[in-house]
Length: 354
Image (cartoon, rainbow, N blue to C red):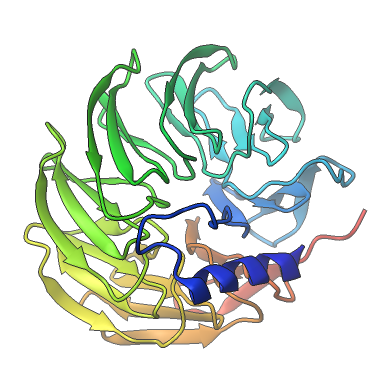
């Protein structure tokens, strides 16, 4: 499985599939998805979803308890306000689990393809993007309320301002739909497939990165383009917006900070290894990982605070959990590594085979 993952990603990097917007050769991201809440981290990785104690790195439970060749998971699990853990599998099933023990509450099995992106939970609804081109919208009991169809796979989590839901598709379009009814409000064609989530600003702006290597600012009212920035190569993940700056990396190994109002570049770094995951802003630092296994922490001016190298490749985003920083390397010695805010390792989790 791990070898297959690396070959698929390396192929995408080498061929540069994105510049024309042709997406037929793209493969879903197959690296672990992490989320954290309170004292527990949840990791979706290949054959199982794991709950891990953030204090000591011990496994609390896994789902399923025994590996099942028909099931695999990579989208980060999401907690609902009423105490469910929602995670989609490559078996086309969306699961609601009890976060205390991993037992199944309900499952939705009407989708026709992989669940690649995490769900969005808002308005007492679950907005679930699927690779069968549809956004499925369920209530908290797992009952379908409506669905919205695009023209290609949807790999990224949508976002909402409560009135509208904004989603990107591999068909190169951003869609704004009514959050309650699913009625299309507007759509906007961009320069490449959209693999990362759109990002909402508080000023009526929507920021979108494309596999064509561009980042756009759009007006949420009508989709009108406000500015465009061209990166060195494709941008896989969503930018992160913090204090008026947008942070993101590209597949050429460039990391950027842009002025979110104007799209002007404030600074950039060149670690020299592809950056596929979204960054994490925590405290005064911006953290990002590279394919070479380097994790960098820089200040908001791009000055190095610390960096380290882990065993494996860092394709996913770092995640904050309690007072820790969590990373999940691919092809590494451990599935999950916990660091303190200075980059010192506190523990590492490696699942025991069952």
